[in-house]
Length: 123
Length: 110
Image (tube, rainbow over all chains, first blue to last red; front, side, top):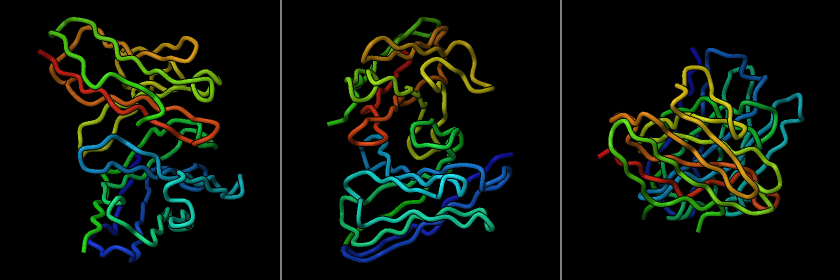
């Protein structure tokens, strides 16, 4: 059974950093691109970024609002994708989801999602 | 303001058919990037309903169907059931912005 579990969420002050982890199981993690999404309170789903598999050079893409602040990486030996979030601001407060892409690029849908990790940015 | 436009809400009685529209532009749906649809209950994992405009993943009943035309897409749900009450999102890719979503549509089963 495919499972994705996010961890590392919490309360953080504006300007600080936080790293989320997404641990996958039940599939060959290294064969898939991985996405991060978020949902702010009372808002809709928003794409955060994407990392391709090693076969495609682990290239990354980001939404404009996080480019330069957030970094996605992966450790296929552990089956984990990471979302490093720096210079956090209150607008980054959201439930963050990781998801498995159905194909090699971010144009594909995401077929399995985690339950989410809550990140609250507040002083 | 979402790049893809969905109606904020739709409603219908059990057993009826409902459609949810998703309007984009020439830089996303009109550029032939696939449209995907998700069902979401807030705080839970979104569920993929339709991928690549018209395809259903294994386990998704054929009550759910997708279509596209020009710069728009639609999700149709027939034989509406109480458990279909949820938020529905369309997703595509935009040449300028990357992965984009609609603002979401809340489906109420009357």
